Length: 116
Image 1: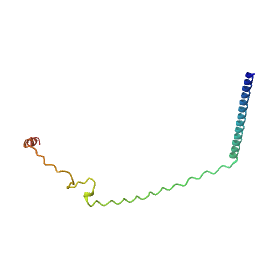
Image 2 (image 1 turned 180 degrees about the horizontal axis):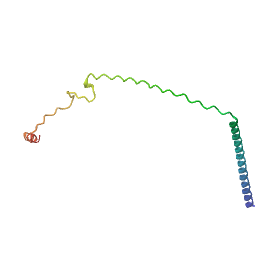
Image 3 (image 1 turned 180 degrees about the vertical axis):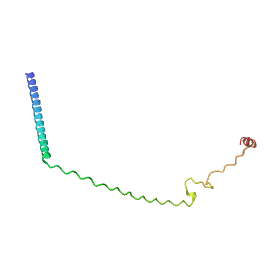
Image 4 (image 1 turned 135 degrees about the horizontal axis):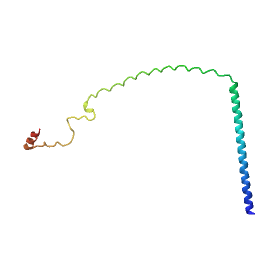
C-alpha cells in the first residue's frame, strides 16, 4: 500500500508540473500575440502617417571667444636683509669651539710642492 501511495504522489506531482508548464506556455503565447498585434498597429500607423518634414540643419555654432589671459601675479619684493634667507651663512658663528690651528711639518709641505 505504501508503494502505491508513493506512486500516486509521484504521478500527481508529474501532472501538476505538466499543468504548470502548459499554463506557462499559454501565458507566453498570449504575450507574444499581444506584442505582434501592437507591432502591427505601430506599422500601420507609420504607413498611414504623413512623412515628417526633414529636420532642419543645425545652426552653426559660433566659436567661443577665448578668455583673456590672466594678469601675472605680482612678484614679491626681494628680501631686504640677506641674513633672513634659508641657508644663508653669516660670518659670526654662535656657539661651538674654536679649534687650534693645525701645523704641517716642512717635509710634508716640500713633498706636496713637488706634486703641485
